Length: 250
Image (cartoon, helix red, strand yellow):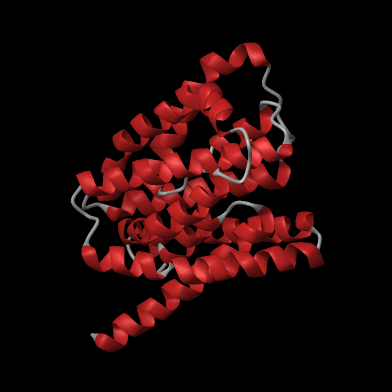
């Protein structure tokens, strides 16, 4: 049992180190990588439990890297409210006993995320549509987050499409990811699946995640961000295919 725990701990630490590198290099991707890799070796609900603290710490830091926090809250509060409601609604899938559908949903979410990132053209959302679209985008993102632990779609494409400056975009992504993480943690607590052992391991994972982020910033200066992002998305697509196929062949 101790050997298994040690091996599992090592895999978790290595996973968050790699996920931190991705986040440091491209500004996002830590939860996507962590959920994708860990769900291949454990139930998605366990992977989501381990994700909570490292995701919160790294995204909370990102949230306060820009100067326009209050302005972004005022602009995006309907989207954030939608994320909370959607996550709490969708979290029943992760916390249910049937992990087959959670794994399948996570796999498809990763595949769609990769396809969009590799081939979709940038979108543009007119300012007049923001107020009506924001809660819909938030609710959809929340449902996907609650069911799979992945909170990038459709939030990331939407935030990229509403005309934010580079600094405001980074801060808005930090806001969205932080709210998503808190809402996911609330859904896991409500489902009674956020156990002390997972919380402890999740807290320990902060160290490799932050170290990975530092390495990622060094990597970003040495290679093309576009090249790194392309291979990252290909890797995520392969993970998604494996997770989507796993319930049918294993």
